Image (cartoon, rainbow, N blue to C red; front, side, top):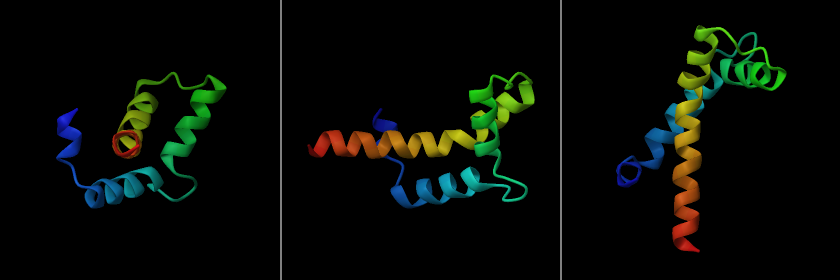
Length: 73
């Protein structure tokens, strides 16, 4: 996972926030797709792609932060 170390925090945070919150109206896609996943209604391929697309950057940020915390601790 050395490739994750090459990604800076600033661009990763910016992309994670932008994709995580887009679009703001009526509700962010990531939140909507996570709710669908929990309800068991995430069945359409487009919805699965939306979850992947909007969730990848926040997930990478969580992984990078976790790796940093584990490394320093």
